[in-house]
Length: 501
Ligand SMILES: Nc1ncnc2c1ncn2[C@@H]1O[C@H](COP(=O)(O)OP(=O)(O)OP(=O)(O)O)[C@@H](O)[C@H]1O
Ligand SMILES: [Mg+2]
Image 1 (cartoon, helix red, strand yellow):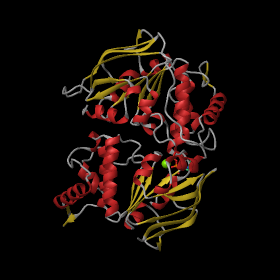
Image 2 (spheres, rainbow, N blue to C red; image 1 turned 90 degrees about the vertical axis):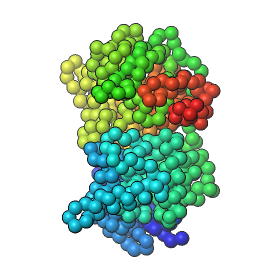
Image 3 (cartoon, rainbow, N blue to C red; image 1 turned 180 degrees about the horizontal axis):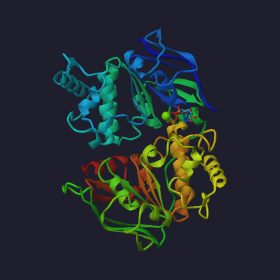
Image 4 (cartoon, protein in one colour; image 1 turned 180 degrees about the vertical axis):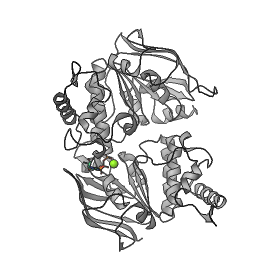
């Protein structure tokens, strides 16, 4: 086997932060090579350097044995490197086929040869089991299909070295299996695959080699068959793997949230997005909503928060909130950890202290009467950063400068600060490392003990089962089953979600 990519002593600083100092890694052709490390360890940065999106301060990159100096991603693509990003980068209002060939259209004279392009794309899709519908608009796709489009786009451009930055964070187990099958196929074709993930059991399942980075430096390179998930976690953070479990029953008499026949019709009048959903949630209770992405969970959340019109009724602490706006509901004590942290949770180009205010414009410690208390806001931002281990220089750091997992920790900290009576938590630990995951679970457990009611949505079935008192399964907008987490395995839950049970 030959070495496809070699990174030698890569270093990169940002103002006030050393993102990479001495990262080295060597990836052979025909292998899957995982890159793991805590949030902010420098994984995305070093991969952006390899992909030409960032320039290293020092260090060398060799591709197939030759030194390269990329000025931009086009140079990297030219050198047959492709990247599937942590946050997708497709054009929503173009079709799948258009997205795949965008930027590298085959020309027949001066017109685009769509017939040839389509044939080539469909052949690749079939070869790697990346099922797609070429003519559908990307905006209509869930995350699993979107990712397949991204992968095909990268392959279409001739990539032989593929970088995947947390591809499984957004996938359900069945989709993870499909992705791993595709990776197997790519590997056997002699491609080199770099795979970033916080799910260490997955890493061990799919990867041949694992490089561990801590605080910007390579600390170990191991064969995955020689290590356990626990040992990897210890190499990353020097601590043991946390478990998502709650203890005992903390449910109280008080009904915090009650939904009665909540329905959201589509504008076209076809099948309802969610249909006649009714359930009660008590103080001190966690209800887990399980479902394959796109089966109405997002709409259910939007109804509870007041982001969407619905019929039926929702009450909070025994009073109807149907007529209340999003802000009014928030003021009443409904907190929200959003699914899409970059679009819904943060103002990316503002400092963290301004992000502390987002959604909390009317509450302490942000406001003193009608006046913004900037000093108190900054101090409280610093407290959140300390308490939730948000690793960044300080409250004045821009949100965009935080690693993905640290953005998530900040949002969780901000929403928990207000101690809402009800927390709607969408994928609260998505993209955070094992240590931070344990810390967030602990925060949720403590809040539950103090009487917080929690609606938990997660693609991580072990998290759903471990943290919930009750599980509701959603399929095509309807609650199709209620399960007792104590008696449900991830496999059983997975089948219930796909309607197989
Ligand atoms: N554009 C930027 N400006 C300033 N600092 C940055 C920038 N990009 C990354 N950083 C900092 O560099 C460090 C490494 O970030 P990086 O995104 O590489 O981490 P990561 O290992 O991918 O983490 P995660 O698992 O949370 O995604 C972090 O401290 C981050 O705050
Ligand atoms: Mg990252």
